[in-house]
Length: 432
Image (cartoon, rainbow, N blue to C red; front, side, top):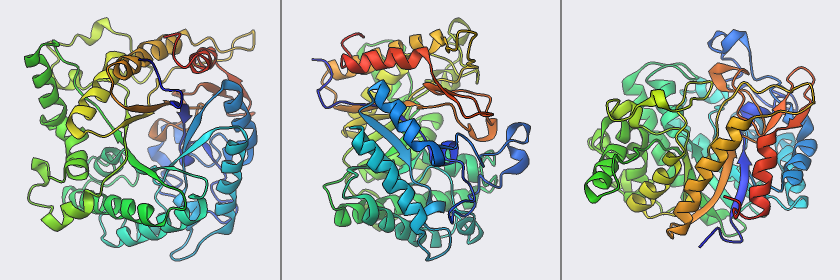
């Protein structure tokens, strides 16, 4: 069957990770701008890749690679730096970025929230406060009004399991809170905000929208592909403790209109009606399988390569995530993130020879090809990330980019893996 002619080959980023300009042109601080000692080696995201000033250069590199799409997030902090205040300079930046993408023939895919909560919203209670639903919707309304004449693809949230669970239960991500009751309230408010945002976008967008969200979709690779193996894998992916926490806790209310066991006593029928407003696709962010967390005996990680973050590299997991999400939720799938961290350096020849990422791309994209060939509706693939960037609490050590960034000079260098990916795009996946 092969990839459709309109398959969205692209790459992704997030505002807090690439933009910099943290206090310029009216932007307010985010919870990540004030993360302080929580960041490796005392680093911060105040400059990052300076994409705010270099977006034209960056889009030119995307065009050179032949990208068909670019997934980026809008910074709430740039758009509404104060309660009830819209910042024209913030609107202008994204208008200019979208214009640059349009001129390059690249489809903009917009994430409305990628973790950079405005500090003023956090001080008003953040996600555990019911006030955040209206604050978020006010922001979404401004963004959709400003950009929906030229943006079709919208994602309400990126990885709720991270910015809810890791931020409010585990306390390992900003705002670094460990409070289980507050975390559960935050989860309910996020789900309600999602459903109401879908309705708002559907009712107010100037062009017919395609709406989804991006999940941190960790699923289980079957131990065998017979019926019993497939059933067990699906149960592990959605009904085990790891599977529910990664997937069903969010997607069952959103896509099925039913609460997973952990939320059964928290969500009312009216809540579920709001939360389950129909979406057009689901985004999956896939890095490694859940097998090592669920069944170490049957899954020997010692035989597999690892990233510099010690994440196991097993290309099969992307195919199985796509398939399992499609079979459970019956929504078209967009691969919204997939990539690996490596300590890439520019060599004496001025190039970055990242052979491991080329192999990674081949193996994972072969899984996407299998899914497409089996008739699963896969809309696109957004590699994480377009360029090396600020990797949250890990700072600038892990390099995920197709493009190398020298953080001292901001010089960009296209990596070998990017050239390899560019050829896959040029042939629409026929080289896989």
